[in-house]
Length: 117
Image 1 (cartoon, rainbow, N blue to C red):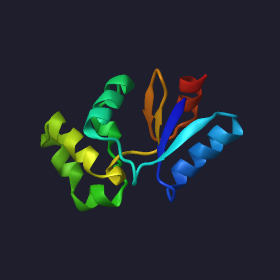
Image 2: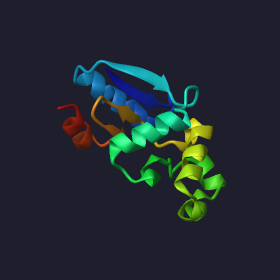
Image 3: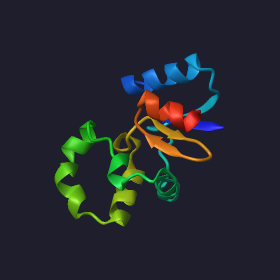
């Protein structure tokens, strides 16, 4: 079963969900603001994804800018980054697609086609 972490007011999330619906995929929708993945889950997703940890940050989000994370992340340890990501779902890049084999951050149709194909 696919899991998709989304925020209801996020336009990219809306596009991703529409694409999943239009292509007949069944998924579990998780509100990332209400049910942010915990640190253990984020570590697991990061390992499965093969992505740099920085790809899990919502770099266009208000909290990211307010906390000036673009300046702080380069000096943070991975442990500190995971702890920070686990504090607030609005810091995590969304949508977050989780399958049995992969985890993707953000929505790029071609990447999702490959992952789900």
